[in-house]
Each structure stands twice: as C-alpha cells, then as structure tokens.
Length: 454
Image (cartoon, rainbow, N blue to C red):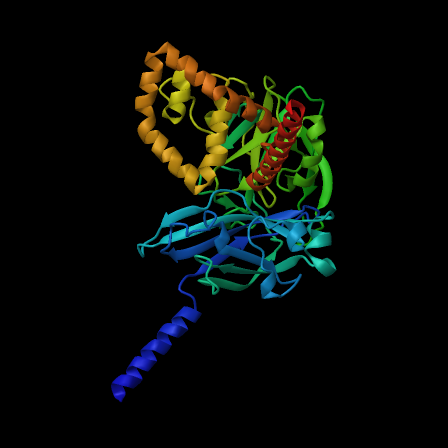
C-alpha cells in the first residue's frame, strides 16, 4: 500500500513538473522612445533544449515560437507565429526574425536558443496608433515555445511588460567596420554587444542602426531628438540640431552631445537625399545597407537603440560591382581556390566572374534556408572538388559546363533585381504561378499547332 502511494506521488510530481514546463524563457527589449516608429525588437531566449534537429515540417525552429500582445486580445487561439500573413490571419502585427536563430551549448549539456525578433504594426500610424491603444506607453506580451508541433508548450511566458526605457544608450558599437560590396555596404561590430546607458547601467541594447550618407549629396544636417531624462513617455523634442561634416571621423556633430540622439523614423525619409539606413539585432554582429550605387563613396556610422547618444567613428566605404555574392554576404574576398562554387569557378576560369554572383545568391539565399538545399550543399562540397579539377583540365568540358549554366544564370540575373528582395515564400508563390501560366500557354500553343497540322 505504501509503495503504491509512493508511485502515485512520483507520477503526480512528474505531471506537475511537466505542467510547470521543463524549459525556461526570458524576453528582453524595450519600446522605442519615438512611438511613431512602426516596430520594436525583442530577444527571446529559451534554455535547456534537447531537440536541436528540426522535426518533419518544422521550418528551421521558427515554428516553435508563438507571440501575442495581450492589450489587443487575450485569446490563446490568436497567437502569432513567425511571418504570418496579416491578410490571411487578420492580425494587427507581424512577427519576424531579425537574424538567424543562435544555438549555444550550456552547462547542463543542453542547448539554449536565442531568437532576435521584430514585431511590426501592419497598418499605418506607428506603434502609438496601432499596437498601443488608449495612449499607452507599454504593452504586455505572452510567448509560447513548442516542439515538434505538439499541442502543449514546452515553455511559456504568461506576462512580460515591454515599456519605454527612461534611460537610453550612451556608448556606440565597438570596433565598427564598413566594407563596400555590390550595391551595398556591410557594417560589422564586436559582440556580445553591451553598452553603457545614460543612467550609468550596463545593458544589452535592442538593436543597431547603420547609416550611410552619400558624400556627394547636398544634405547638411541630420534629424535628431533632444533626450528628456525625466520622462519615459513619447515626448522627446524633435530638433534637427546635428550637422553632417564630410571627410571627418566625427561626421555627425550635435550641439548637445549628451542629449541629442538621431531620429531613426525621419532618417528613413531621407533616401532621396542620399541617406540610407538599415537595422539589425545588436547581438547579430553585422548588418547590410542595401540600395546603394556602385562607385559612389559613403560616410558610414552605426549607433545602438534606444537612443544612441554616441555613434561609431565614420568610415568611408564604396560599393563595387567587382564583388561576389559571398562577399556581398560578408565573407572574405573570393580567390581561385574558393571551395564554395568550385565547379562553376573552374568553368569560367575565375572566382570573380560576374556569372557566379547569381549562382552564389541562389546557394546563400535559397539552398541554405531549406533542409534539402543544405544537404545538397554538404554533398556538393564533398564531391565537387574532384569534378572541378577535371573540368579545369579540359577546355571542352569548360565550354560544355558554361553552356549548361547559361540558362539558370540568365534566369537568376533577371529574377534577382526584380524579386530577389522579397521573402522566399513570396518568391516561391510567384515562381509557381509563373510556371503554371507558362505550362498553360505551352499546352494551348501545342493544341493550336496540332489543329493546323490536321
């Protein structure tokens, strides 16, 4: 009898432990001080994960996270997964990954997952008029973590208040560098990214914003806010008091450096004047500013948010067409021995041939982001070198390989400028529709030809 009671108590303990969740979750982040901005960034960390291989149907662990803002609804059925189509789901916000999910082994011989997340309003009006009803300056999150599409979560954060911080970041990203690539500039900084805040504390900032100002532009000032340390509300005065000084390491100079910080919302409105910006999680370590012109020089700097009273020293970078797609993604300069595209390199005789760029884009953007594609890359890296040596040694094989690659290279060369900036899901849908249209047109043409021959 006593033994039976002990077994029941043990089973009850296991059940309670499961209901209390076997993993822990932490969420860090703040709302921007400028609530006309339409997004905010979070870091979601889930600890003690044992299942580090995606299950069938899992999209590289993205399917494991669900988010909801309880100010908008408290319905558990309306939790939003990553990249949910707002038109289909009828939700007022979108949850996206800012960078790849990081996996870190811990002292328990398990793994911690870190998700750098961006929550964006799906309608105009910024956070203030969409996600923060009744003039609120904070919101409450609920976050669930699931594994293998199970109905019950492995970790849960019931209530996390995200508010505007009374302090803002003071120090800049450390050791920031800028390198020109094809129509873009890659900015890197040292991680882990910790910074000193205006209240003297040391914390991890939400994100990094990188800015590129075209040196030949006519712009003379940069929009800024005047920090009000007495309030956490959305009431910092907007003042254009920072001057742009060309050919200076301190290329943005503010009249009150202890209180002025740049206005990210208004910076996005200056692209026509030659000012470009991009943002990423502070822990990602790098960011790419796209949409630039090859051959033009830019002053480049970066700063943390929220706020960012100090900026990294300005670096001059010039986008260039003489870069590969691997370099475009921040890799080292390609050489003839570059193993990442060796058969095509052998066919064209150089790792810098312009026709290799779309092939590398297809590898880095499409293949690497799917399990079958990643498996193919592993197989290719293992067996490709021997084939590349054969191709390089026979001119006839080089000609034949170039002929085989011609059609996909031409197709990708047209596809990338037109649609390469869209999410992969959207590209896949467009490709499927175009394929169906082409097949239908081909069928109709064949039928007409048959009727003529009859």
